[in-house]
Amino acid sequence: MNQISHPEPLPRRARFFPLQALLSLLGLLSAQAASPTPSLDRPNILWITSEDTGPQIGAYGDSYAVTPHIDRLAGRGMIYLNAWANAPVCAPARTTIISGLYPPSTGSEHMRSLTRLPAPMKMFPALLRDAGYYCSNNNKEDYNLEKTGRVWDDSSTNAHWKNRRPGQPFFAVFNHTITHESQIRKRPHSLSHDPAKVRVPAYHPDTPEVRRDWAQYYDMIELMDAQVGQNLADLEQAGLAGDTVVFFFGDHGSGMPRSKRWPYNSGLHVPLVVYVPEKYRRLAPKEYAPGAQSSRLVSFVDLAPTMLSLASLKPPHYLQGRAFLGPYEASPSRYLHGFRGRMDERYDLVRSTRNARYIYIRNYMPNKIYGQHIGYMFQTPTTQIWKKLYDNRQLAPPQTFFWEPKPIEELYDLQNDPDEVFNLAGSWRHQRVLNQLRRAQHRWLKRIHDVGFLPEGEIHERSQNRAPYEMGHDRRQYPMEKILRTAELASDLFFPAEPELVRALHDKDSAVRYWAAQGLLIRGPGAVGFGHTRLSQALDDPSPYVRVVAAEALAKFGKPTDLDAALKVLGLLADPQKNGVFVSLPALIAIDQLGSRAAPLWPGIRTLPRQDPSAPNRVNEYPGRLIDTLMTRTKPASSR
Image 1 (tube, rainbow, N blue to C red):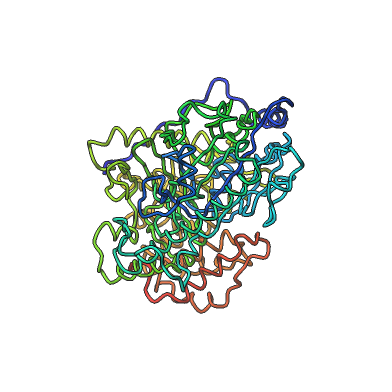
Image 2: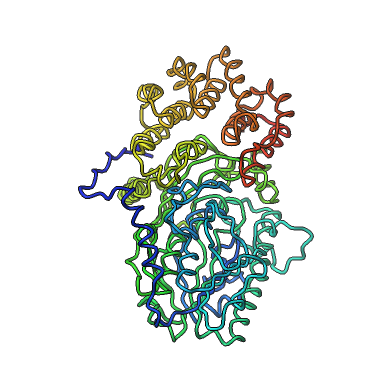
C-alpha cells in the first residue's frame, strides 16, 4: 500500500452563502415545499421496510431465498441494484432517512445518540403533512435526532393508512422486525432452509454454527415476505393498488457479523423495489418498466427528497440527497457514501465511498480491530465460534481479518470480489480508481461539514445552544480543515508524522490535540517514546478526551514509571456519574484495551456507577455494558 496524499484545503467559493442567511431562508423554502397546486392528483405512498435485510431476495438473483411476494412486486415494478443504507445499523440509518441529511453533518452518526436539527429544518413527513398527506408509521422510529413539532399523524402499533380522512392522500410505513439480528439467533427454531445449501461468505468460517445462523436468517426472510404479501393484499382489497406508489427496502445489511455495523457493501447494500402504478407512470424515471433493473446509485439520503418530489413538492435546498422519482428528479450521483461511528459501547471512525464498481474505505482508527467486543453482537453464535476459532489459531486469511487491526485504506472490486476480501489499495493497477474515490470522499466530508471528527462529547459541548449542524458550519467553533488534516495525518502510518503530531499537541483546539495524541498511540512504542514529554504533559490537558488518549498511550507504550499516573487519570475519568457518559465510555474502553496492565483499576471498576443521570436513556446502558465486559475478561485485550 502506498502513502496517502493529503489534499490541500479546497479554495473558498467566491460567492459562498453565509450559513445564517441560508438558515433564515429555510423556513421560506419549507413553506414553498409544502404548498403544492391544490388541483394536483397526488399518489399515495406505501413503504414496507424490513430490519437487517440485505439483498438476499429472489428478485436479486438469490436462488436460496424464498420471497414470492417481493419477487412478484419486483416483476410489476423495478429493482435498484445499487441501493445503500449510508449507515450499517438501524438508528443512524433511520436518522438519515427521516432527515434527508447525512448524520455526520448533524452530529447524529453515533448509535443511539441524540442531537437536534436547526429550528427551520423539518423531518420530511412533517412537510408531507403540511401539504395535506396523512402520515402513519407502524411503528419503529429510533432516530438520533429529537423530534420537534408533529412529525407523524400516528406513529404506533395501531398506525395505518385506513385511519386517514376519506380521499386524503397518505404516506404509510409498515416496518417488519422478524428479520432483525435478534431473530436469527433465537432458539429453539426449526429450520426450513437446509444449512448444507447455504453459501458461506469468504470472510466467515464454514462451521455448523455459521451455516445455521445463515439458514435461520433466510427462514426469517421467508416469514417477512409473507408479511409483505399481507401488506400488499390489504392495499389491493381496499382498491388502492392503482393509486399507490409502493417501496420495499431493508434498513441495512443482514444482522450477521461483518454485515451489520460495518460500512462495507455487505453492511450497506439493501434491496430496493419500487412499484409505480400506470396512473402515475409520469412520476417514474425514464428507465422504469415492469421487471426492469436500474443501475442508478441511490441511498437513504435520497429518500426524503424523492418522497417530496412524488408529492409534487420541491425538496428544500438544505437536503443532501437527490430525488430519483417525480417531477423534481435530479441527476444521478456518481458516488454513494457510508459511515461508522460509535456502535453501541465501542468507538471507531470509518468512512466509505463507492461508485458503480468499487468501494473505498478509510479507517481513521486503524489500531482498533474490526471485531471490537460489542456485547449485543457477541450473542450471535456465529460471532462466538468465529472468535473462538481465531483465538485458537484455527483460521487463515481472509477469515482472520475481522479480529485484527485494520489497514488505513481498503479498496474492493465489487464485480469480481463481492465478499470484499481482496484489498486492492496497494495495487498499482488500481491507483487511478483509488485516488478518484479518495478525492470524492474528501470532497464529501468537507461538503457536508462532517463533525464526526470531534469526540462525541465535544459535538454537544461545542454546539451549546445550537444544533451541531450549525456548529459544524461555524469555522470558529469547528475549524474542520485543520482537524481533518490532523486526523488524516494521525492515521496515515506511511507518513513520518511524529514531529508534526507532537507540535499539534500544543494546538489551541482540543480536537487537534486529540487527534495528535491518537496519532502517537496508533503508531505505537517508537512514536510514544518520541512524544513522551508532551504526552506526559497531556495527562493534565483541559480536555478529558485528550487525557484519555494520552493515558492509554503512556500506559500501553510508555515507560514503566508512566503506568501509575496514566491509570490514575483513566480511573478518575471512568465514572459516568462524575464525568458524564461521553467521557466515561472512552476511559472504560482504554482500560479494556490495556488488559492486565489495568488490573489495579479492576476492584474500583466493579463499584462504579453504571449510568450518567443527566444523559439520555438512549446511551445510558453503554457504560454498564463495558463494566460487565471488563469484569468477565479472561485474556488481556492487548494480546489479541
